[in-house]
Length: 119
Image 1 (cartoon, rainbow, N blue to C red):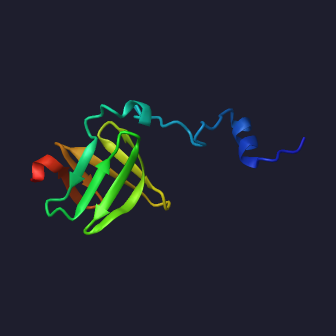
Image 2 (cartoon, helix red, strand yellow):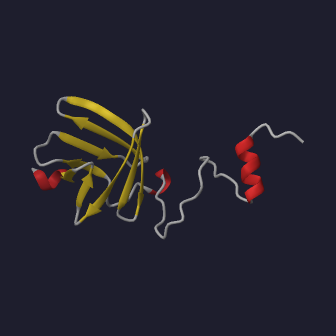
Image 3 (cartoon, one colour):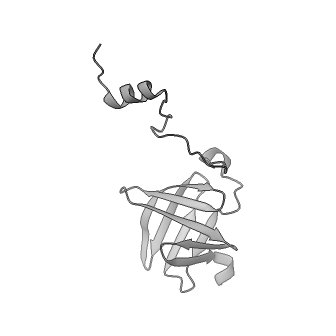
């Protein structure tokens, strides 16, 4: 028997199967929030730096849109939230993460606040 998908053959030999997204499910005590249950998530909305130069909107469909200075939609991609951690996958392939601490988003060496907190 010849396997046309060596990765699948390896997964079968190990007794594991990839998920629909092609990656293993996280072994994390926190539930992964998907786009179907993000509509009421407390971290949704606009997050901005104190100077207003970086503006990141977490959308209920599991996508984000980040503006930098006058450049709208400088970065776009998807995100997942696990507990107080957030992971980003930019549409260009760049990945990043962050953490929500006391209603402040710590991301890439920056502190982002809810839009209403900065005004």
